[in-house]
Image (cartoon, rainbow over all chains, first blue to last red; front, side, top):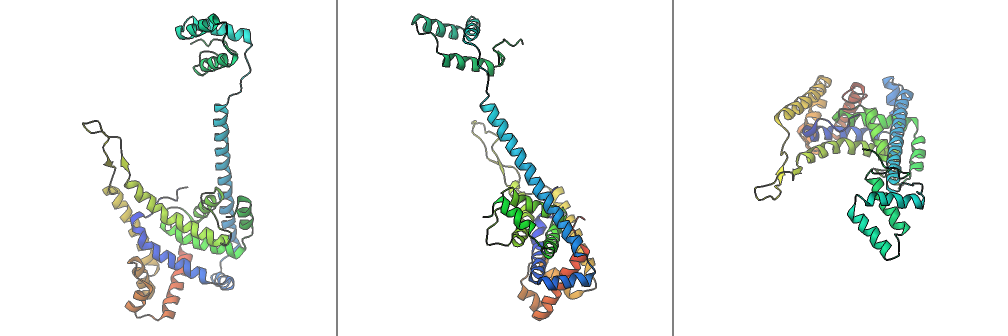
Length: 147
Length: 184
């Protein structure tokens, strides 16, 4: 449906004619309008039913639009907070070691932590693993993804 | 403002004669558009039901919907004209600074011709419709020139009663000739 195109610049001239006609219609009482319909031999129920159908179509369209918006919001939310099953601690350490060999920065971070006897915190491990997942280097279980 | 449930409820409460009035008012606004009256009603309900237009509690839903249809019909042109005044910041000058370039001041010649032809067709259809009713034709022509009620009455030496009855005649004939708007 395209309601947004019309006679464009010419329309200010049609506006007055249309406004006046609508005003004339709105001045009528219900009884007067019914009398006009009867005089014309018009079918008020057929006209009313067309309007009912158009209203129902508008409601259904708005419902679908809300559903699409809700679905988009859920998808966005899901992408923002992906719930992943935890990778076991031993496996996490081996994954990090494997990648540390190719990443001097990560290697020095792990070495430093080991030297200080602190080890790397679980939170740090999770953060690094999340980065690797986001980069598409490992899957959700921590397995390397072949490229 | 009415919430969604209340809007649904008042829409369900529209009587047969309310619905006839809604459709007949919509058919007139659809005369200025390229869609049918039912598309326009659909659009007005969509705007209320999707929350883009809010209906005040003290306003009858019929009046609200007629106002929404009018607004959709008139604003379609305004937004179209606004789009023509948009500026582009894509271009950069020799100093690397963005240049403000008007995308377009006016519709292109082809669009102008098509619009003029479209309007001419609508006016010709009204001319034909009222060819045998000179007072109605004079009022319509005066409307096209946006003359006031007083100016129309003075110019055509019309009493208020004649003016009002001419308006009613114009409306009823338009309703019979264009029951679904211009395109249908």
